[in-house]
Every structure is written in structure tokens, then in C-alpha cells.
Length: 241
Image (cartoon, rainbow, N blue to C red):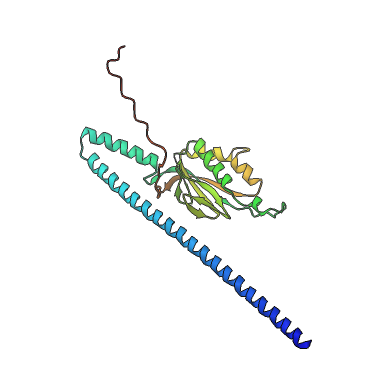
């Protein structure tokens, strides 16, 4: 009986060991599969980034060609140069300088009384409120932590940080806006305005005017996969008045 009991115990231990080995093998295989998937995704994003860089280089070469053509001094060239400068300003392709306001937002240092730490952190909605208020007040150019904001720029929370133009940033957040300093400052600091609302959560917001701010140009590319320009309709032949 003692020998039988020993065999039973040994058999149980062997079965447990085999099951453990099988489980570890499956876990290793799953981990290897996930690693391979992540590597493929990384390679795809790397290829995409390289493609965008090539597209950006090509666009800059085309812009340089347009500038050379516009500098010929002819009347058509001057009109082309003026139109090109206007388009570059609108597309955020040039660095800008001028008067405006700077806004620095930092997470709250107040004691947590709600039990939810997220109530005391800056979120994408807070940054969007500030940016929208500046745009409504006539800001001509805006940057967030050095990222030029365009109509296609995204500001969204990704965990404990905020993604802007595909890059992630943590607090403090620094916003530059070029425009009339007095108007922009009043829009942000008015009673029950965006700064007043954020201060209720002890979010630290510093707003100051400046006579000289510099906002960098947009570093990415804008792709239109679905939207296409509408061709103007041709006049009908033989149409009367």
C-alpha cells in the first residue's frame, strides 16, 4: 500500500509538471505571436512615416520651384508669389511671429476630495476649450507645446498624456496664439470664462500677453483620401440671355 501511494503521488507530480510545461509553452507561443504582430505594426508605421517624409520633401521641392517662378519679376509672377504666400500662411507651412498671448496649463495641486484623480488632471476637452476660445477671439495662428494647430490637427487624450499631431505630450501644456493681445486675453479671463471654470478645479492657468511670439510651421503632411475638388461646370453652348 505504501508503494502504491508513492506511485500515485509521483504520477500526480509528473502530470502536474507536464501540464505546467504545456501551459508555459502555450504562453510562450502566444507571447511570440503578440511580439511578431507588434513588430509588423511597427514596421507598417515606420514605412508610413518614411512615405510621409518623402511626400513632404517632394512638396517642398515643388514650393521651391513655385518660388523661383514667382521671383521672375513679371506681373503674373508677382500675383503667383502673393497667392503662394497666402496659401502657405493658411496651410501653416511657414513660421510666424507677432503679438499675442501665451497660456500655460498645469495639473491641479489641490487635495483630492472626489476620489477620482482624473478630476484634477488636464484633459483634451480642457485644451480644446482654450483653443476654441482663442479661435473665436480672432487668433490667426496657434501652437500647443510647439505643435502648429491646423484645422486637421487632433487633440485627444491617450492615457495620461495628450496626443497632438500624432505626438504625445504631458503637462504642463503651453499654448501660443498670435492675434490682438488685449482681445485674446479678455476672451480667456472673462468672468465665467474658460480660465474661471478651470480654476474651480484648481487647474493652474497662467495667461500673459506678449508683443513677440513665434509659432513654428506645421511639420506633418495633410492627406485627402476621399475629398476631391469639384470641377467648375462648363457653360452650355448656344445659351441665350
